[in-house]
Image 1 (cartoon, rainbow, N blue to C red):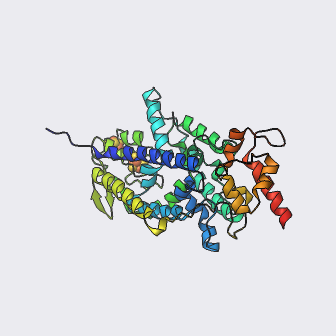
Image 2: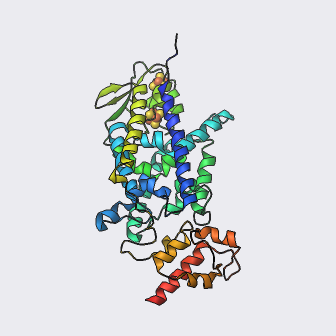
Length: 383
Ligand code: SF4
Ligand code: SF4
């Protein structure tokens, strides 16, 4: 007799595929530079949230945010309304990594989850909503992605690059990856601002998860496998905004006591998983070929008023591009930084020091910050 396929594993496949895709997009950006390949921020739905107030009031995106981030945000919200927080459960690389590390932790013998006391856990889960509001307001007020350098997701996707700039992001990333060995999704439960935003949307979702009290044998398997640390075994209906629709609990329930419904109609876990993965992937691919994905590259150095914003100059900008955008002649850069006359101007700023062994006035290897300061001083003196 042929064994029935457990389509629930499709969730792990989609999590792995997302990690691979994001690493590919990051490497592409790091190799080709910001002028030819969009930064990873352009593919982050949270970038859309951060830029929302700015876009509503000025019609402009924050620097690094492209239309694709808004389109992804709209898709993710739509799926949350229909299926619950499936983005978190199926397509978030950071969530996936935490789950994998916890799985590994169990394999090496850390069987019991380390949990905060129930009362503290209950209130600590609200922290992420406060973080979300602070980020949205500050990003709007300061006109910048204020969370970027503290964001462990952003750090993860820079694969060790921009260490100094993102030292907090990398530190948080290391802490949460280590804690994932012995506790479940620490970041998602307490701190993730995107999780908070989707948690609000989840309150309006058609997704329902119910427990049949009559058949339940209180074995607690559902609690054990829930990556969100929810008390499924003692809930008639799982109403928590933190449920990520992963269906681990449904899959592992020995008595089939847990059922999922959408619009009040029961749906089996295999069908749910297939629909979510296939529909999400085809929607994103479809959107990426539409005008809603339009990515205006090469304009990262200018603010909403078209003025040069030196803070936005990246190490992945080329010398050729900053000469074109700032209008400063090559000879000015050449004189300031002792650049060779025959330098290939398509070189990225971050590569110049290494390739030509050039130092700044302090005797340190030439950095992007040196270019920022030089450009800022020159633009000031031009005014
Ligand atoms: S309650 Fe079930 S579906 Fe929701 S996060 Fe926990 S295990 Fe996943
Ligand atoms: S896994 Fe199923 S039977 Fe066990 S406690 Fe949860 S709902 Fe009840």
